[in-house]
Image (cartoon, rainbow, N blue to C red; front, side, top):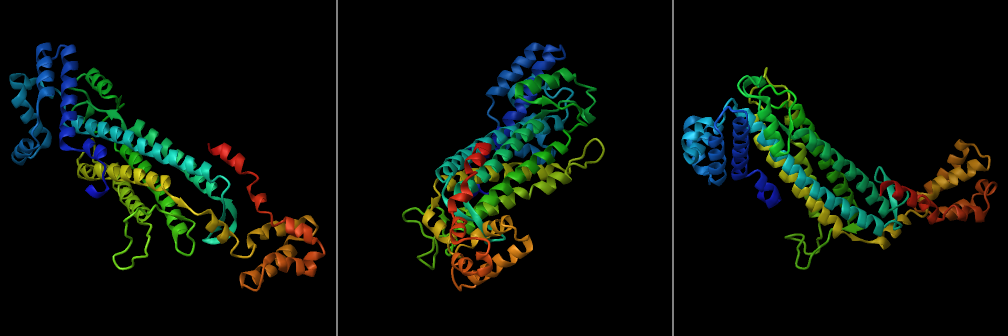
Length: 432
């Protein structure tokens, strides 16, 4: 985790203190369930809960114990016993370490996803506001980076809104799939603990019961979770890349907000660089780094091994922290984005009306000209315009073969910019 790219709320979920609190809650709830089943005394369960809840766990002390015993859960239980006393013998009855570790990871990932959804909602709100603001702001659409046909800047943002809406749905599904509880004991057979304990703990922690755990929660769930986060990161990068391209000096259709006193370069005082969207592109790569290791964690030996453990200790906090930061950074970029409609219109007209070539092509075919001949006529005049010899409209009017089929008035009508935006309202109704 890089502090520069981390928000406090998300970091706290992955703190050692938060982890140990969840560990105790799992053990404490399990003791309450065991007491209800008559496995341990009610008085012991009450004592464990009261003293454990009030305990101030020492990360340093647990680390010290772990250095000796070489086992993190045993180190925690040993430390916990100092607060509880004699009744600590009833803690962890019939459980195994993975019951605590896997269930805790589920809680942390579920809570992390709740924060990711907050960030996602902020992104969606910003996109909707700016899309409606620029619903009919004309701009040139580009394919292969080359001028194609007119679109609106609002449509660009509406597309992003639709994409991030799908990302939100994936996060909701991923949260539901990851939020499972396993308290099934060694190799997952419930030989030494009643399944009712698992159900009780799951309910208290807001999780669902893992249908069958082989001492661990199956890692296909985690693979799907991190894959969903990876897709979200790619969507962030797509929008960030679009903004970066549109901010290039020779384009300058949009620009990241540049605050008073901000400096863009140590060498060149004139620079106003798209540093936030460049940063988002890098953060997206960090998030996607988790996807392949999560996939490789699925294939574990027999009922369990711990080859997944070291991986998840790294990717779980890092990935959620980076994606959380990226979502809020992206929202800020959209909220404060400087938009230059006059530059958009100027760029649209920069190629002398070539964006109308398809309309002319179709009009000629409607007049009975074969598509091949119509394409040849239009392309001939378009290439003259492309090479800077003059305006497309003028060349078409002067072309005798084109005039045979289209009058000057008909050709001029084909250059109406508003024609391209007739369906914008319908597209917006689909998206919003």
